[in-house]
Image (cartoon, rainbow, N blue to C red; front, side, top):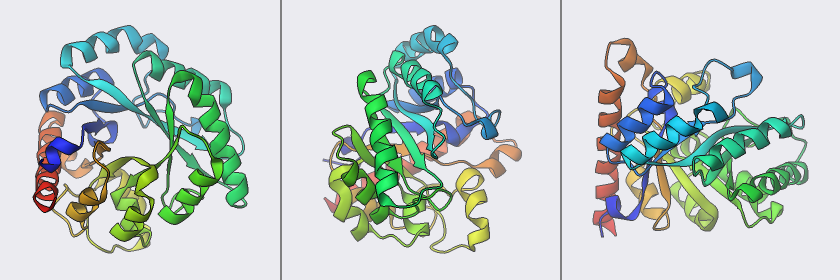
Length: 275
Protein backbone atom coordinates (compact mmCIF):
# COMPACT_ATOMS: atom_id res chain seq x y z
CA UNK A 1 0.00 0.00 0.00
CA UNK A 2 1.41 3.38 -0.96
CA UNK A 3 1.98 6.19 1.54
CA UNK A 4 -0.62 8.21 -0.33
CA UNK A 5 -3.22 5.48 0.33
CA UNK A 6 -2.45 5.13 4.04
CA UNK A 7 -3.01 8.73 5.16
CA UNK A 8 -6.00 10.99 4.48
CA UNK A 9 -5.01 14.51 3.48
CA UNK A 10 -6.33 17.71 5.02
CA UNK A 11 -5.69 21.19 3.59
CA UNK A 12 -4.81 23.72 6.29
CA UNK A 13 -6.09 27.27 5.94
CA UNK A 14 -2.55 28.61 6.49
CA UNK A 15 -1.55 27.21 3.10
CA UNK A 16 -3.75 29.87 1.49
CA UNK A 17 -4.71 32.56 3.98
CA UNK A 18 -5.93 34.71 1.10
CA UNK A 19 -8.57 32.12 0.18
CA UNK A 20 -11.85 32.57 2.07
CA UNK A 21 -12.98 29.34 3.76
CA UNK A 22 -15.57 28.59 1.09
CA UNK A 23 -12.92 28.94 -1.62
CA UNK A 24 -10.48 26.80 0.37
CA UNK A 25 -13.10 24.05 0.48
CA UNK A 26 -13.57 24.26 -3.28
CA UNK A 27 -9.82 24.13 -3.92
CA UNK A 28 -9.38 21.23 -1.49
CA UNK A 29 -11.96 19.29 -3.45
CA UNK A 30 -10.23 20.05 -6.74
CA UNK A 31 -6.95 18.83 -5.23
CA UNK A 32 -8.68 15.65 -4.01
CA UNK A 33 -8.02 16.31 -0.34
CA UNK A 34 -10.39 14.55 2.03
CA UNK A 35 -10.55 17.33 4.59
CA UNK A 36 -9.87 20.96 5.42
CA UNK A 37 -8.68 22.72 8.56
CA UNK A 38 -10.45 26.00 9.36
CA UNK A 39 -10.34 28.65 12.07
CA UNK A 40 -13.47 28.81 14.21
CA UNK A 41 -11.69 30.54 17.09
CA UNK A 42 -9.07 33.26 16.87
CA UNK A 43 -7.71 35.01 19.99
CA UNK A 44 -8.58 38.69 20.27
CA UNK A 45 -4.98 39.78 19.64
CA UNK A 46 -4.91 37.91 16.32
CA UNK A 47 -8.36 38.82 14.99
CA UNK A 48 -8.22 39.85 11.36
CA UNK A 49 -5.12 37.82 10.57
CA UNK A 50 -6.96 34.58 9.93
CA UNK A 51 -10.26 33.88 8.11
CA UNK A 52 -12.77 33.14 10.87
CA UNK A 53 -15.72 30.79 10.39
CA UNK A 54 -18.78 31.66 12.47
CA UNK A 55 -22.20 30.10 13.00
CA UNK A 56 -23.60 32.34 10.26
CA UNK A 57 -21.30 30.66 7.74
CA UNK A 58 -22.45 27.11 8.51
CA UNK A 59 -25.29 26.65 5.98
CA UNK A 60 -23.26 27.86 3.00
CA UNK A 61 -20.09 26.04 4.02
CA UNK A 62 -21.95 22.81 4.66
CA UNK A 63 -23.41 22.95 1.14
CA UNK A 64 -20.03 23.75 -0.40
CA UNK A 65 -18.38 20.88 1.45
CA UNK A 66 -21.01 18.50 0.15
CA UNK A 67 -20.49 19.76 -3.40
CA UNK A 68 -16.70 19.45 -3.11
CA UNK A 69 -16.71 16.06 -1.40
CA UNK A 70 -14.66 17.52 1.47
CA UNK A 71 -15.21 17.36 5.22
CA UNK A 72 -13.97 19.56 8.05
CA UNK A 73 -11.35 17.79 10.15
CA UNK A 74 -9.47 20.18 12.43
CA UNK A 75 -10.45 23.43 14.11
CA UNK A 76 -7.88 26.10 14.98
CA UNK A 77 -6.87 27.51 17.41
CA UNK A 78 -7.63 27.37 21.15
CA UNK A 79 -5.17 29.07 23.57
CA UNK A 80 -5.05 27.54 27.06
CA UNK A 81 -3.41 30.39 28.96
CA UNK A 82 -5.16 30.41 32.32
CA UNK A 83 -7.60 33.03 31.04
CA UNK A 84 -9.57 30.68 28.79
CA UNK A 85 -12.58 32.08 26.94
CA UNK A 86 -14.68 28.99 27.55
CA UNK A 87 -17.88 30.57 26.24
CA UNK A 88 -16.09 31.54 23.04
CA UNK A 89 -14.47 28.10 22.84
CA UNK A 90 -17.84 26.40 23.20
CA UNK A 91 -19.36 28.53 20.44
CA UNK A 92 -16.40 27.76 18.16
CA UNK A 93 -16.62 24.03 18.89
CA UNK A 94 -20.38 24.08 18.26
CA UNK A 95 -19.80 25.80 14.91
CA UNK A 96 -17.17 23.24 14.00
CA UNK A 97 -19.34 20.33 15.07
CA UNK A 98 -22.18 21.66 12.90
CA UNK A 99 -19.77 21.34 9.98
CA UNK A 100 -18.66 17.83 10.98
CA UNK A 101 -15.32 18.66 12.62
CA UNK A 102 -13.65 15.84 14.53
CA UNK A 103 -10.53 17.55 15.94
CA UNK A 104 -9.48 20.85 17.53
CA UNK A 105 -5.97 22.18 18.14
CA UNK A 106 -4.98 23.73 21.48
CA UNK A 107 -1.84 25.57 22.61
CA UNK A 108 -0.75 25.90 26.23
CA UNK A 109 0.69 29.28 27.26
CA UNK A 110 2.04 30.87 30.46
CA UNK A 111 2.09 27.68 32.47
CA UNK A 112 3.98 26.92 35.69
CA UNK A 113 4.47 23.21 35.13
CA UNK A 114 3.20 19.91 33.78
CA UNK A 115 0.43 19.45 36.34
CA UNK A 116 -1.13 22.81 35.55
CA UNK A 117 -0.77 22.23 31.81
CA UNK A 118 -2.41 18.80 32.09
CA UNK A 119 -5.31 20.25 34.07
CA UNK A 120 -5.91 22.92 31.43
CA UNK A 121 -5.74 20.42 28.60
CA UNK A 122 -8.07 18.02 30.44
CA UNK A 123 -10.59 20.85 30.88
CA UNK A 124 -10.47 21.58 27.17
CA UNK A 125 -10.93 17.89 26.35
CA UNK A 126 -13.98 17.85 28.61
CA UNK A 127 -15.38 20.91 26.84
CA UNK A 128 -14.85 19.34 23.41
CA UNK A 129 -16.17 15.87 24.26
CA UNK A 130 -19.93 16.60 24.04
CA UNK A 131 -19.37 17.86 20.49
CA UNK A 132 -17.67 14.61 19.49
CA UNK A 133 -14.39 16.46 19.01
CA UNK A 134 -10.92 15.19 19.90
CA UNK A 135 -8.60 17.79 21.40
CA UNK A 136 -5.06 17.93 20.05
CA UNK A 137 -2.19 19.54 21.94
CA UNK A 138 0.32 21.18 19.61
CA UNK A 139 3.85 21.98 20.77
CA UNK A 140 6.03 24.76 19.37
CA UNK A 141 8.58 27.34 20.47
CA UNK A 142 5.97 30.11 20.63
CA UNK A 143 3.95 28.52 23.44
CA UNK A 144 4.66 27.18 26.90
CA UNK A 145 5.21 23.65 25.52
CA UNK A 146 8.01 23.55 22.96
CA UNK A 147 8.95 19.90 22.48
CA UNK A 148 7.23 16.62 21.76
CA UNK A 149 8.28 14.84 24.96
CA UNK A 150 6.79 17.59 27.15
CA UNK A 151 3.59 17.72 25.11
CA UNK A 152 3.17 13.95 25.20
CA UNK A 153 3.65 13.90 28.97
CA UNK A 154 0.88 16.50 29.33
CA UNK A 155 -1.52 14.57 27.10
CA UNK A 156 -0.87 11.36 29.01
CA UNK A 157 -1.20 13.07 32.39
CA UNK A 158 -4.55 14.57 31.34
CA UNK A 159 -5.92 11.03 30.97
CA UNK A 160 -8.70 11.92 28.56
CA UNK A 161 -9.94 9.50 25.91
CA UNK A 162 -10.43 12.42 23.51
CA UNK A 163 -6.97 13.88 24.08
CA UNK A 164 -4.28 13.51 21.43
CA UNK A 165 -0.97 14.97 20.33
CA UNK A 166 -0.46 17.14 17.24
CA UNK A 167 2.89 16.82 15.50
CA UNK A 168 3.88 19.68 13.22
CA UNK A 169 7.01 18.45 11.45
CA UNK A 170 8.60 21.89 11.38
CA UNK A 171 8.11 22.41 15.12
CA UNK A 172 9.32 18.88 15.88
CA UNK A 173 12.68 19.40 14.26
CA UNK A 174 13.10 23.10 15.14
CA UNK A 175 12.79 22.22 18.82
CA UNK A 176 15.39 19.45 18.85
CA UNK A 177 13.09 16.52 18.14
CA UNK A 178 13.70 13.55 15.88
CA UNK A 179 11.78 10.84 14.07
CA UNK A 180 12.68 8.52 16.95
CA UNK A 181 11.08 10.98 19.39
CA UNK A 182 7.92 10.94 17.28
CA UNK A 183 7.94 7.14 17.10
CA UNK A 184 8.11 6.95 20.89
CA UNK A 185 4.80 8.88 21.14
CA UNK A 186 3.09 7.80 17.93
CA UNK A 187 0.31 5.96 19.76
CA UNK A 188 -1.20 9.31 20.79
CA UNK A 189 -0.49 11.32 17.63
CA UNK A 190 -3.84 12.11 16.07
CA UNK A 191 -2.67 14.21 13.16
CA UNK A 192 0.55 15.48 11.67
CA UNK A 193 1.27 18.69 9.78
CA UNK A 194 3.79 18.64 6.95
CA UNK A 195 6.05 21.33 5.55
CA UNK A 196 9.79 21.55 5.00
CA UNK A 197 12.80 23.76 5.53
CA UNK A 198 16.51 23.76 6.29
CA UNK A 199 17.76 21.55 9.12
CA UNK A 200 18.69 24.63 11.13
CA UNK A 201 17.69 28.27 11.08
CA UNK A 202 18.50 31.25 13.37
CA UNK A 203 15.94 31.31 16.16
CA UNK A 204 14.91 34.87 15.37
CA UNK A 205 13.64 33.61 12.01
CA UNK A 206 11.46 30.82 13.38
CA UNK A 207 8.23 32.78 13.69
CA UNK A 208 8.40 34.24 10.19
CA UNK A 209 9.21 30.81 8.80
CA UNK A 210 6.33 29.14 10.61
CA UNK A 211 3.61 31.56 9.50
CA UNK A 212 4.95 32.86 6.19
CA UNK A 213 7.79 31.03 4.43
CA UNK A 214 7.72 27.27 4.89
CA UNK A 215 9.25 25.14 2.16
CA UNK A 216 7.23 22.66 0.13
CA UNK A 217 7.51 19.09 1.46
CA UNK A 218 10.50 17.39 -0.09
CA UNK A 219 12.18 20.66 -1.03
CA UNK A 220 14.01 21.18 2.25
CA UNK A 221 16.25 19.13 4.49
CA UNK A 222 13.84 17.71 7.05
CA UNK A 223 13.48 13.89 7.12
CA UNK A 224 9.82 13.93 6.14
CA UNK A 225 9.75 10.55 4.42
CA UNK A 226 10.98 8.87 7.60
CA UNK A 227 8.52 10.91 9.66
CA UNK A 228 5.57 9.80 7.54
CA UNK A 229 6.74 6.21 7.68
CA UNK A 230 6.74 6.41 11.51
CA UNK A 231 3.06 7.43 11.65
CA UNK A 232 0.24 4.99 12.29
CA UNK A 233 -1.85 4.05 9.29
CA UNK A 234 -4.88 6.34 9.03
CA UNK A 235 -3.25 9.34 10.71
CA UNK A 236 -4.51 12.53 9.12
CA UNK A 237 -1.78 14.52 7.41
CA UNK A 238 -2.43 18.24 7.21
CA UNK A 239 -0.79 20.25 4.45
CA UNK A 240 0.35 23.39 6.28
CA UNK A 241 2.62 25.24 3.86
CA UNK A 242 2.26 29.03 3.97
CA UNK A 243 4.14 30.59 1.05
CA UNK A 244 3.67 34.34 1.46
CA UNK A 245 6.50 35.13 -0.96
CA UNK A 246 4.79 33.15 -3.72
CA UNK A 247 1.52 34.97 -3.06
CA UNK A 248 3.29 38.32 -3.10
CA UNK A 249 4.87 37.39 -6.43
CA UNK A 250 1.40 36.87 -7.90
CA UNK A 251 0.95 33.11 -7.64
CA UNK A 252 -2.74 32.46 -7.01
CA UNK A 253 -4.11 30.33 -4.21
CA UNK A 254 -5.12 27.50 -6.54
CA UNK A 255 -1.61 27.13 -7.88
CA UNK A 256 0.00 27.33 -4.45
CA UNK A 257 -2.36 24.66 -3.14
CA UNK A 258 -1.81 22.44 -6.18
CA UNK A 259 1.97 22.61 -5.66
CA UNK A 260 1.73 21.96 -1.91
CA UNK A 261 -0.57 18.97 -2.35
CA UNK A 262 1.58 17.47 -5.11
CA UNK A 263 4.73 17.88 -3.02
CA UNK A 264 3.06 16.26 -0.01
CA UNK A 265 1.84 13.33 -2.08
CA UNK A 266 5.34 12.82 -3.46
CA UNK A 267 6.72 12.53 0.09
CA UNK A 268 3.94 10.12 1.05
CA UNK A 269 4.62 7.99 -2.02
CA UNK A 270 8.28 7.71 -1.04
CA UNK A 271 7.22 6.69 2.44
CA UNK A 272 5.09 3.96 0.89
CA UNK A 273 8.13 2.61 -0.93
CA UNK A 274 9.84 2.13 2.44
CA UNK A 275 6.89 0.25 3.94
